[in-house]
Length: 461
Image 1 (cartoon, rainbow, N blue to C red):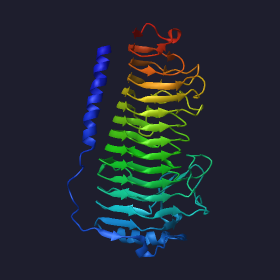
Image 2: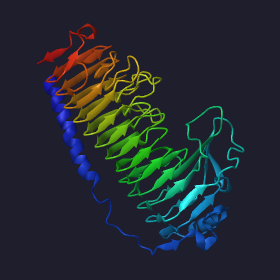
Image 3: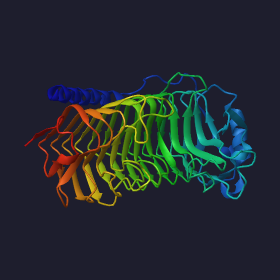
Image 4: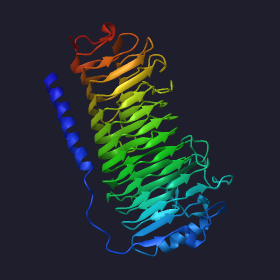
């Protein structure tokens, strides 16, 4: 059983490595067949003076954009463009979910937005007018809508504190000002190819800073996000989230959510997430999480679990070469720690399996809260987990553990890990491990015998 599990983990690593090469392949060698139409909002009356409401100028530009099938290049010149989302038409996608037309709407293939100025939402207006408590209103600085090979390069978006930054609240309207979004139509399951969001800055957005759905070979790279929610993909494949920086994100700043396949999340930085995890991988397959720096998240540094939206679990996830520093700050989160594998709150209807966590570094300060676990938690319906060649150092509280098994699991391998902290670290079993359970070649890490299921445990020197 041990050999079978090791072989399975090696196969996962090899397959994911092959998929990394595929992700970096050129998505297309095709070119637009029509000449590009070049526009900028100043041609339609925008001032960019930081005081005048320029919303109507963008609406006039949109009317021209809607009348052509040519690729469009919108350039935002230097300046500060004040806008009012209420002046864009509103539709109801589903009961309680409202969306306005975006400020800039890219609906033609090979279109582009570049930016030297700043798009800034006007402060002091009543943006909740006509919205019931608990309802959500979405609006984007740029929307890529059912288009391919579009690029948003260097957008500077400032929500100016007007969005609902603190997450969804049932007793008030919720304003989701997004920097960039990419969507299909309701009921449309086509994947749109080759879109890129790069070099953008999104501040105080309220909604997802960059959210993309139904994408293939899309890239979110070299963006800076602050005081907003996260960036990521859902129902997408062969996509990358790389080299981004997030400060004080409310929800997970880096996200692969629901029916995603073959996703690379690499070389990103997250500091001080105020509510969620540093990275969420939920309901996805064939995901690589590599070379990220995740610090001071309220919840876990990384959650690998079940997608409540798409109703599916995870499989074949490689977590390699990351640095996790003092995550799991909130004592309200069950099973606190740096990484949680499985569904933490309740049983998962779909398994989370074949997860390999290897070659990572963990820095812990012993302040995760009582009996919460400090490095890795195994939660509901998580199976075939390999924890190998990781290094952790710092401080553990007396009730903390390197690995805590909270719910029954099978095929758990803990091999070659090193704890360089204050005391000998523990592996705590609060639930049994079925079938293969291997603890081997670890340094300064001991299983706690009285809490272990000794019938299923194998300890090797």
